[in-house]
Length: 177
Image (cartoon, rainbow, N blue to C red; front, side):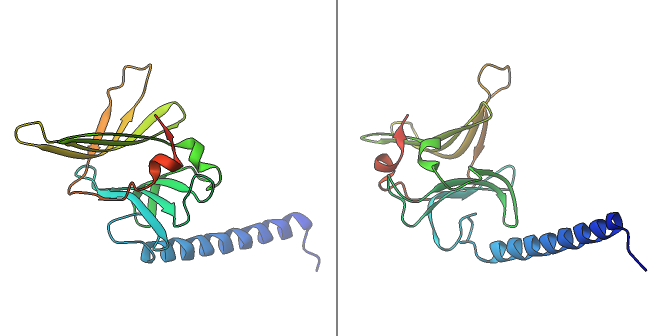
């Protein structure tokens, strides 16, 4: 008995979809177990910034390849939970240097750091601020989301505890804001 070509194609497509789904689940499972604690960064990545947020109870991370320089490596923002990353920017790890901006201001008792990027007209800013001139001193970290040119209010998601952060050499790698 001959199987009509359309049925054969449907069976082949369903089998390949199941195979892809299975390999994606395996990759996601491996990703969940291969992360550094309280981050969405792989064990072989450098953690630029990572913290668990107060609300929603999610993780915000910026990871980089170990070989990050102004000419090599990549930088990637991730938001969500292990095994369920809701936002990853950029998806492709090539040419990431041009997609982020870095700003650092420092003086006695004041230290302000931002890593900025834009997705579809929405501005994101990962911030790490210390204002020692305030009484009492204020330390605030997290991510702010801004919709310029709209009536939407800026959203600030703050860290539950002090983030894991390593900004060394970012001023040499990323363009300044």
